[in-house]
Length: 392
Image (spheres, helix red, strand yellow):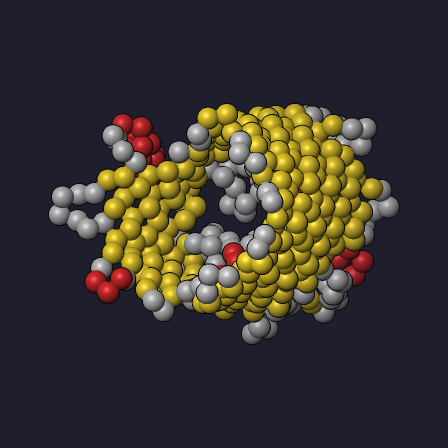
């Protein structure tokens, strides 16, 4: 912890007092850039039906999130580029799914790029980061920070990608092709591999846990087209993993899964329209001698945004169903329904206004409702989040 704090202090100090955001040592060909953000947020749950009904539940709260990025870049002969990134944050380990207090690694990787593409090794976003869905602005609306202000033990909030899209909390290797095509039409493809899902930094999985995934693959592609005055993006992705304990050491284990999705966005005169569909397959499900969690899992998004000089607004909708809570191999019989959300809907509108370079105010309103398979009651409510963000 002391080393992390000292490193954080050094990075902040460098960013604050260096005469420029870029540094280069006298004998080194590497450029070092410091950047990041600090974001203060106030959130409240409003409406007659609290989506997290507990006797002593508080209706509002504050939080602060920060991130510090140190990017190192160099260029060698024949146009070869190389470098890396070290990124520290207090944000949630699973983006958007809970708050964070301690400083931790967000990204840490090295890369090598040239005419034949880019290789990235370490903790970074994977190939599925090429996937696009309903357009968002500022705090992210249906893919935003409203989940930090609700009780996720009761509400199984979803993401547009269902599975964490381009998750940087897993150490992996990624290859991305260059963007192939011409000025009007370009295609890019990527693939990632991680031996152990959810392990990062110096964590190494020595045991095949019944609740873990191994040999994880991500593949993504993206097409960008210009049909003046309209531009189009079309994307697709696939993720897969092998469930733990296929050797029969336990009576239950996570099921192997293959998830896939498609998404598109169309832009015209400051407006962007788009949506997506993801089938999550058997992700986050268990099977044993008494139960087989085999219900349908998917998520659908649609939305639009408008961006001008200093402001942007967006409206979007997400519908989903699936096993949203923690992996639980102990479930049996009808108890398997405890993990299943049979209907989740989120309606969102948001905006952002940039007062000065780097300083923006952001606002999100999200109405959500949910039906779980284990109870006839319906959770419903609204979340409002106001943010003041400084990006440097």
